[in-house]
Image (cartoon, rainbow, N blue to C red; front, top):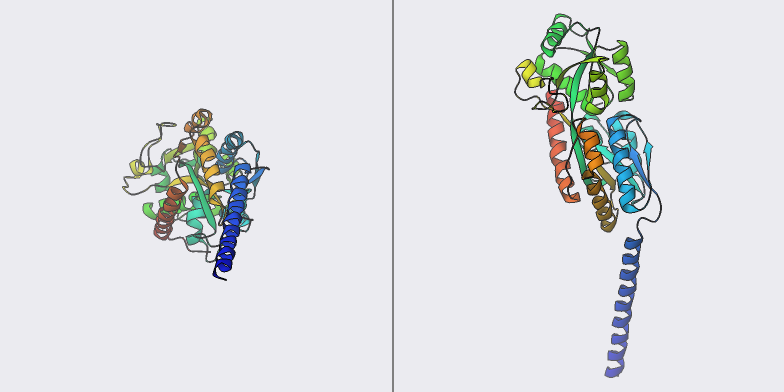
Length: 330
């Protein structure tokens, strides 16, 4: 009887181990096969925006590395919230990713009273892509030739000076400038950076602060007038522009926009690692570096864990900036 029980137990254990072996083999085969169909990358801002330009360049290089096409889809609206929400609610199967930003994955938590997703838990970090400073610019009809003159003009006519924004970084940078410089401006919201730029060139708004991808070609082309950069050091891409701190004698003004890639929470770790490896290959790609370094973009390859930690730090940083700029949650 004892021998019979022992034999039965051995058979049961053997069945378990065989089952585990089959499961592990299937899991490994699944991981090796990934990706076996196109991946969708959602850009939560309009075509032509910095997020769009950088996201498409990374997607193209990552497609080469992964051996599968990454199809970019623009889903703009509410400072990137609509696109981020679509990814948060997607299946965690490795076939939907987010080209995230400081807006979608750091600032929205402080800008919105209620988000349709939990910013802290809805996403699985893939990797950091890079960052870019912004340029403060005015249309050519504005008489101010530098930022100090613009501030003086705004102080002389409170609330009559207008500024455009189509993203969190654009809004916060302008409101933070107004708060620290002691001026009052009227906000004109736009659905996209290119639309705001069109109205800036046309003279419908006075001032616009946006990333280099949107700003630099227009400044260098003479269609608008650059006044300052939002980083703490002058940019090699346009060294003639002072920093906001230099122009106004401030110490603590700085605002940098960043880009990072996320998947829906629950996406298998092996898929995240494959995507991270492809992303880092893109971040080190010579063509991407040459194309975007001229726009002030600096890549910073890293691990998913590094992005998770950076996201926590950036969320706290943007919450502080939003409080200091006295922006109320909507």
